[in-house]
Image (cartoon, rainbow, N blue to C red; front, side):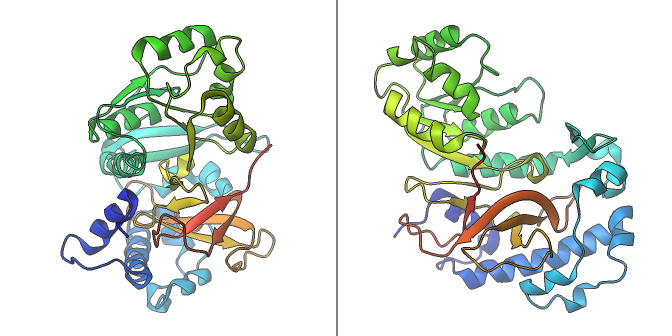
Length: 335
């Protein structure tokens, strides 16, 4: 079976275009282990936070992926209290700063720092992830902000250009009727947005006026209200519905589902994911729900090592019907 666009991209990154054979799970593990060692040494040498946080552990003990469990977690509280100490480059190399809304218990905002090369990684992921269902010539309406360079909308537009598709940033839906008219006028093929924004179009009295098949696919970018949104969109517009999973800390993508819609195919060349018990921090076996933890493998500005997301997830062990060998992640729906 042919590789999916995402698997082909990851294979090229892992083999660095020097190997023409088939990608195997062992290849992925070897690559991730190498990148984990590189990331830890890089962060310890350049980040004041990790220089102290990792002072009692060494990559000499990292002979297999499971050995990463010996390393301490990074938490959102660490970012809140010591954010600038995570930086591994000078401020002049930072292309984009994202400020996360503080949680109720937080006293300071959390800031994330990305270099131009970090943003390029996100564009590259979006390019190949979207290639699963976006075709050259498609017009994609983006119901997200894209006015600032490095914003999600801007990254999506730049990724779509590489597929010879057109990204149109409209921003959050303020007037559903006007947005629906724009969909018809511009002959939009695909839409990207959070469930609440897209459902505001479906629920509007003019929402059913879209001809079946006018919008071929919708990409939802949040878990909140996801299951209900998927079915309502399929019923109302007869479109296929995909889901992109990621957080701002991941810059910002981690995975996307395929036409089989049974879990997210993980961005394994740039992220190493773990599922742990929320209370003990011990690893959970596959197919068991726990807390998602990730380590960046290729980020230069602000790498994160064993970052606790607080999100519920599990790995799926059965082979996806699409045939990819990439690990699949299922995230816990939010009401």
